[in-house]
Image (cartoon, rainbow, N blue to C red; front, side, top):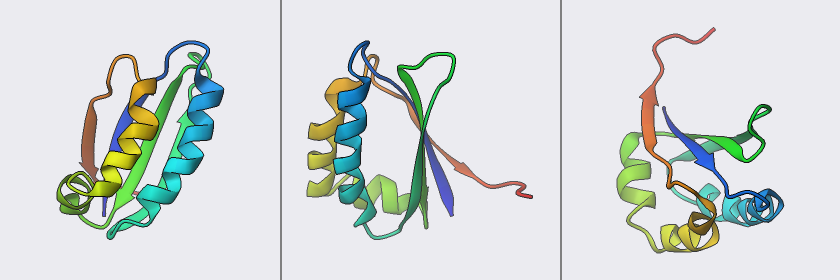
Amino acid sequence: MITEVAVLNVGDGRTKRFEAAFQDAVEIISAMPGFIDLELQRCLEEPSRYLLLVHWAQLEDHTEGFRASPAYERWSALLHHFYDPFPVVEHYDSVLRT
């Protein structure tokens, strides 16, 4: 299992619309092969900043499967216009979990 991590900065005054759009986007990503689960957290210090954690069975499920699919086009149409700046997405492999 790998973890996709993205810090999402949403333009001021747009958080409620972003959260509503994200609810719709969850249906898109959760139907993808290799998707395990996701968590969206809102920053307490910066309320327009979110942390997105997505668990995939393997890296290629995200980088090749999801990102190369028509589903990703729908995902990006729902969400990408909210980000300022556009997020850097990184992938992590667990070293220690308790």
